[in-house]
Length: 243
Ligand code: BV8
Ligand code: ZN
Image (cartoon, rainbow, N blue to C red; front, side, top):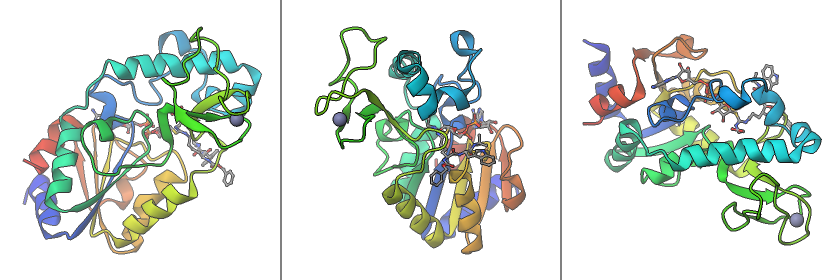
């Protein structure tokens, strides 16, 4: 049986599915994957230095401008066929979407209640931790290059994403972990499997009995736990799985 038919059969027999996505699902929407995101203007910065509290403290304006440029690029993009197929899957079988992406495209494709493990780039929160959180648009400073201030305590506002060295939201993690423990099938789409603890979720699903399917154009760290690997782009493969 062809691999694609094997995966269709797995999905047909599943009562609970987890779809675990990474930056590769947004590639065909024109959003560079995380490792490519540092192209052009940002090519001489390491993501791991800009996407950190130390990076923001050292130069709030540089980091804020990096996020502002990513938000502007994302605003020009639309969810691609992979996102629409994932949303369709949710209407066929009990499917939890767990994403590492901060671009908000699952929600824009109508996905129900996507778990955004690394936050969302269109939201901001108080850098001093007073608890304020809101849309960046509601905050946008007069000069988009200068990080706006928290409307509650006047400290810097920061992007509401999880930076390297920061812990993930316990609520989001608990929801994602529970979904992986209950899953019959876990589709792992568009992720290199490099970033932890998120990349540990498919192995958790497998240890609880789920069949793991990895979908992407290149080898990933998660291929070795996959029952099936579908080599291809998400925008081509997903519509074949969820016609
Ligand atoms: C934490 C938000 C501690 C910000 C992001 C050494 C070993 C192991 C771990 C570590 C280590 N050193 C440090 C760590 C920990 C670190 C980590 O994992 N680092 C990695 C780089 C080694 N993790 C952390 O710091 C985490 N926090 O550990 O805190 C702690 C613990 C307890 C208490 C206190 C503190 C926080 C990690 C979260 C970082 N934030 N994003 C922002 O976006 O600005 S992660 C960032 O990378 C994005 O969210 C992105 O989604 C994510 C993961 O990358 P991928 O999604 O996989 O994207 P990538 O480009 O890698 O791959 C794309 C894939 O798509 C490729 O496979 C490609 O082939 C494929 N593809 C391409 N085109 C297509 C496609 N697939 C399908 N279709 C296509 N068309
Ligand atoms: Zn504040």
